[in-house]
Image (cartoon, rainbow, N blue to C red; front, top):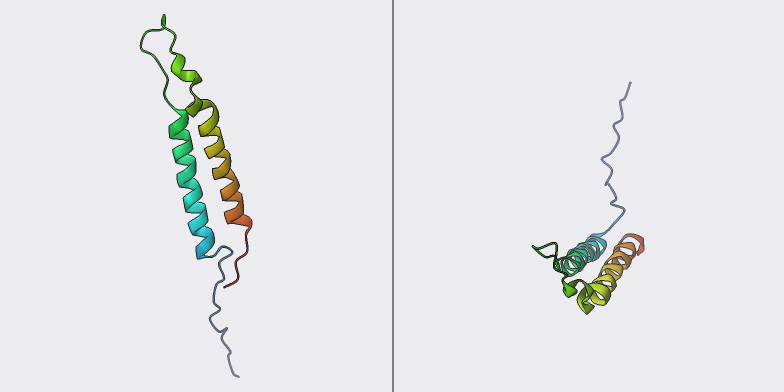
Length: 82
């Protein structure tokens, strides 16, 4: 009786190298967005700090964060031809 062995099958990764690079850049973009969003606190609770209403926190940081989340979606969904 002859025994046959399965040949070693090559595992196929669902995401390629370009997808991982895009997702890595998106994660860095998200970190930058959250750093831009942080700050603006004060040590004295009786003082009001107007830095919480800066353009960086109200406009730039949310745009960077949305761009990062969109880029994560593109990195997951995009199919590249190899």
